[in-house]
Length: 144
Image 1 (cartoon, rainbow, N blue to C red):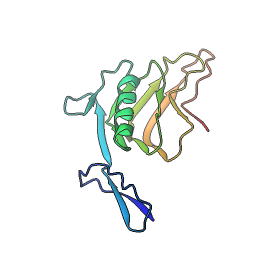
Image 2 (spheres, one colour):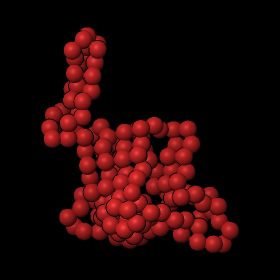
Image 3 (cartoon, rainbow, N blue to C red):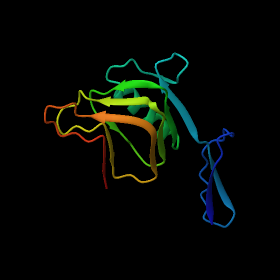
Image 4 (cartoon, rainbow, N blue to C red):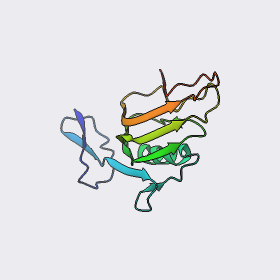
């Protein structure tokens, strides 16, 4: 039996046990990165085309085994979709103070796209798209 444990307080390298025997374990470090306008954040946004930076943060966290991307209190302006790149990710804000603004999106462009992945959490932020004009945009577009 192989088991996987997530221990954020440990910085252990991902280890391939190479064994399916009982008692083999693999420890993975869960990652949390912070996105926001401050230079103390891991990824810095400017209030224009912020999906680029959010996508980079999500891809980084996914590349090291998954974890959480925290969006600080800010208005994130989108010029294109935020794309969830894989499973095992959390995108979290700070309630209504974390505002994802997709008003500038073109028709059929969605603010957040989650396609084909499970084990993804989106929580604690406010989001809007389509400020009139007959556009067809979803705030969060999910498909399998």
